[in-house]
Every structure is written in C-alpha cells, then in structure tokens.
Length: 151
Image (cartoon, rainbow, N blue to C red; front, side):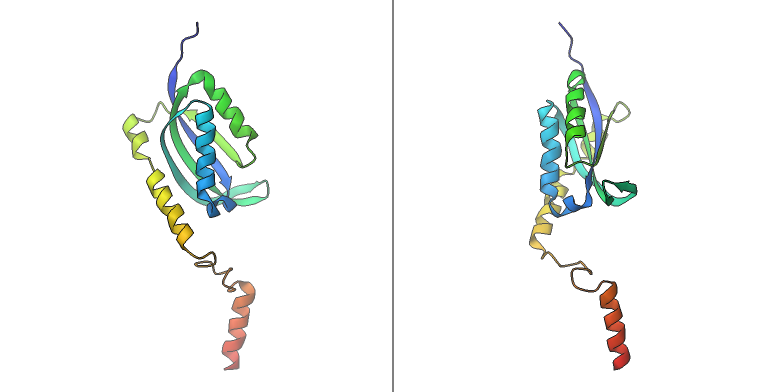
C-alpha cells in the first residue's frame, strides 16, 4: 500500500482583469479546485492586479491570487490538471513551499481583507471612481479644453 505524503505547496493563480468586478467568483473557483483535489487551504489572498508582460488570450492586465495549501503529493496532479482545464484561469503555477515556514504561510491569510474588498465593491456604484465610465476619457478631455477656451 502506498504511503501518503502531505506536502505544503504555494499556488499562484492568474485571472483576467475582468474578474475584479466579481472577486468572489474567482475566490470560489480557486477554493473549488483545491477542495476537489483534497487540499487543506492554509491561506488565500488577492496578491496583486498588474499589467502583464505580454498579452495572454487578449488580456493586457491580470489579477493574481496567492495560496498556500497542504495536500497529498499524489493528488497534486489532479489539482494541476484542473487548473490547466479551467477556462476562467489564464495561468497557474504550483510549487513546493519547503522554503516557507508555517507561520509565514498563516501570515499571508487575506480572506478577510478580500471579503472586505468584495463588500466595498458591492456598495460602490458601478461608474464611481472610473474616469472612463464618467465620460472623462480622451474625448472628454478634449471637450473640456474646448469649453474652457470658449469662455
């Protein structure tokens, strides 16, 4: 009978920028993939939103999620397979986290901050904070300049 080895892993998941409108679905998707593989999630956080070095499936920007989890080494292949088959993910990378202590992994827990950000985005109007949604894009700036000159 094969002996089960439980290892700690670090997973980085990249979503398109459009997911920032619904961070809860991205979080649920990552947790679903990990749960399907029998992983115990130690920490999960939204790591960053940034410009990509090159276009991936037509996306210039992406949202990164960082996770630390423990799972059976034999079930890791199932998790990696699910991430490759996912149509929601642009890229993923899973590595052993032997270089990270348990305290450091726990310190990266960001689910509460993520829940706060999700709640905050739900309370804000869709066009609030967006210059382009408010009509102040490149054409809006030209219009303002003309109206200032006319005065």
